[in-house]
Length: 240
Image 1 (tube, helix red, strand yellow):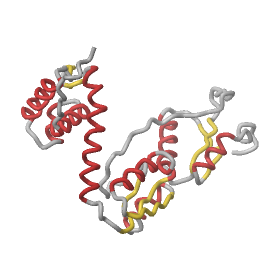
Image 2: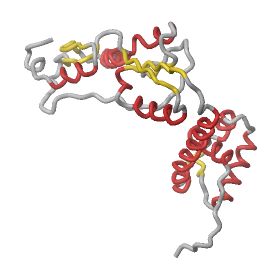
Image 3: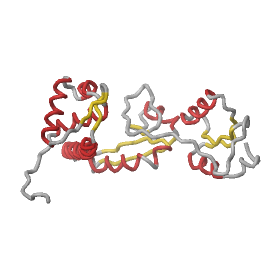
Image 4: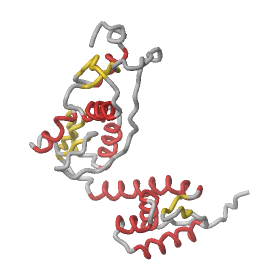
């Protein structure tokens, strides 16, 4: 039975911020650099946090610091607490910010991470108008360089601009359920046309593995690629 009189613990935001850094970077040394503290200070902070919550949060694995079950449990809450804290502060500081923010988004991000990003921006900057322009990855850097957009959301990281990783996603290969690869037969590929980082990655991987391939279907947009992958014509030798 849980006692209703149990005292409430107030979690320290600085401790949580350092905790998240350690969880993401796996070592106190790397986390110390990220939060601009010494390694010993980070170690002391994590000891204080463990004392505060009364649970062991880290387990040593070689030089790495891995989360315990309780650490994993706390990490999800820590991220939410810090996000709401930062969002609240930003909202109060920039609540009167007005104007137009022009966002360039690649096809790949338009229906995945972009909706989440737009919701976050709208909640923090309610008076800010958003202008979204969706184009191929290849044109994103050019749009940013010409100041056609203020920021871009893309799967490509141009070296000329500062960038922040919003998320990582695995890459998968897909084929029809009935497709059987015959030994020595070129793999029929459904790809975006040039330039495309995904196309480059696919061809480089196949070439490195010395696997023959042929371009069976090439399209300029993701919806067209989806149509091509669902079509039977190229599999039956009618296209390619």
